[in-house]
Image (cartoon, rainbow, N blue to C red; front, side, top):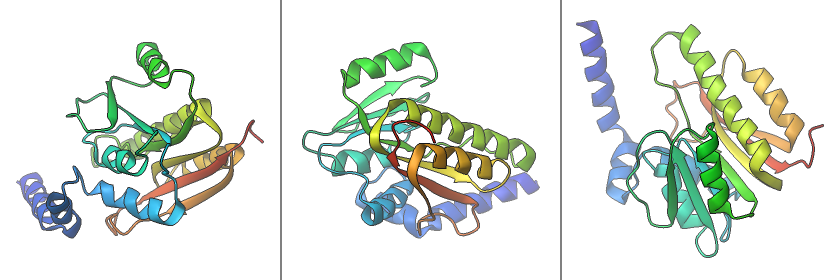
Length: 209
């Protein structure tokens, strides 16, 4: 019964949420779009002509923002293990980006071009047990960082959702070894009680320091 009450409370909070209502009104696929919009307004990640890879993209809020802000000669390639309805200006690859077949598809789409920005708003399915959820979340962030280090051009940027807790300091250390500057962002659309923050790596180094 308590789980049912908890689920009802979450649903009520979700649909009463200012950002959810605004996303529905403005045609964004998720409230997360406002997180990327705020960070990009401040840090100017997405520019016309940018080649962007969006990891764990479904349902597509971040891909929508990236496509709009990198329009022109830019391209957004979104990857997710879940299906995602088409978005104008976005190439979607369904599958696990750790698998060779998916990486080969990505390389075909890139056609020799280097990536300007890697985005990751990935989060694990939450069990409610911190000892389980935190390692899962950090594992996804580590995968995103490793992907960025392999695919970003020198000078490129990486933006990734991270949950503060065990493993955070180690990830921050790894990021600082690969980017000239690493910043922490907590956009207004993040729920205040959430431990999520966004790590922003700017100016990828040609080799780790």
